[in-house]
Length: 229
Image (cartoon, rainbow, N blue to C red; front, side):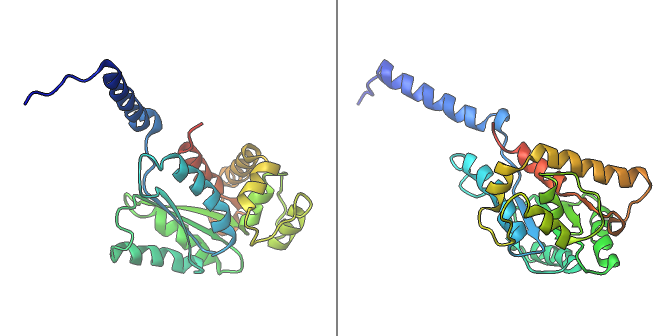
């Protein structure tokens, strides 16, 4: 039995499919590493960061069945956050994840707990874990989308200021969308970098002494790098 040669039109379709596959899998659109973002809170941070995760995972769903960016809210304090990640990895429950981000606030936790979370992570050799803390709270990061802010007067004032720009709520389901629509992510990154950089320039290296400051911009910049324009 001989096989009939394929029609020219059929060959063209096959070639187009191969080109499409090569385009999707090409270096221009490199797949993000499997990343677990572990949040201290169970509402505000996950609601916001899930906006980035949805956008990224949606873009790669035709290439990869498994979501590459996962946001996990724990309800644990700063010290317990790192221990929780270590346990999950040791037990094989998060097998396959290549990167972990810890998202947490200073709030009213002891200085040592807040500082040692970062120092413990950065003291590990070839660590897969990174930190994105806010001092005093993530509302500072949100506020920087709308204005400069340098006062050391805490979460309550951040929230009061945020409400001048939109109807802020810690449990608002469209938190990511409204901040991205009404505020400026580029301004937030610029302002956050400047705040953090000025503390470092002045020799202040303990996170608890950096008030106000946030390293959320580092996580956000990484997530942005996975978004295809």
